[in-house]
Length: 203
Length: 242
Image (cartoon, helix red, strand yellow):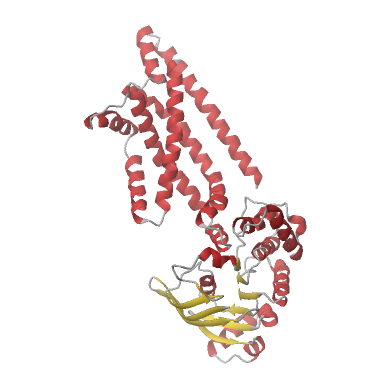
């Protein structure tokens, strides 16, 4: 049960973290400031193209090289957030780019500022397009949180490994763990679908 | 009201506008015609800086458009624009499409803005659609909403960028009627269009553009009856013969 909370807490924190980082990086990738755009592109390509486990190891073993330490839970959660943020940044960017250019032109030509246009016109339309891929990313995130086990992150899998070696009831234990993951992911996936349908219906 | 002085614009290597000189008086209706790709829409879009100019001078209501210290949002308040593809906000009801800018830019109260919006919806003949979403409207109705949206800012100038080109033929009339009424009330209008009938009937002046240049400008009667330039004659014979 402790592992369930570990997974839940890590997933929720990483979810919030990855969304915030992802949103900022998405904005970076679309500004007219060249340096930020470059940074955003490098961030996404770098993070997206290395394995998650490696990202987590960087946060687990990296700090000790700099003279401080992160425990497995913290390193794992940060790694998870950073890793997922690259995918989320791309999803958000794709959503914003998919809003027709005429929307920006119509709003700006009526005297609205760039920020006002983003807030009232572009983002509300982009969100509809972004929800399905975002939902997928969040489900992946929960499942990916099992890598915390490898840095002793006190998650579901970590405790499951312990229990299975103690009791030798390996198969039973992991079936049980799978059910726990489903308890987290199924409602999320269902919730995303409902939200999507509600937005779809509005206009 | 609008003054182009030797305006040039390049898209990379492509010379879109070449030495444009154009002066639009207050209350004047100028209709711009010409083949596709002649630069008419680009010229129109320079007026509210949806496109920037490469060189030359452009002032609107005495304000230099392309200058760092010009607050473009202040200038744009005075210039309404209607697009070929309407560009209504699909996630907002008709009434909210119209009140957004008056509330956010002019600082009107929601109630005031709605009153103004209803006045203009009445005027374009679709007050009953205020609570609908744009997707529930026909093309002609959407374009009339777009015109009402522009007018609700009480602009000094209205720009029309091929407002009837995306419409089914039977809906063109209802949009042109609204524009005709607007012209009669003395609105300053610049209209890019392929509707020669509208140009002939409503324009104070017709401009013919080809390959980024203003080839000819004249009052509609003279323009259609006795065009001076060869290129104008060729163009008119093509569009009027069918």
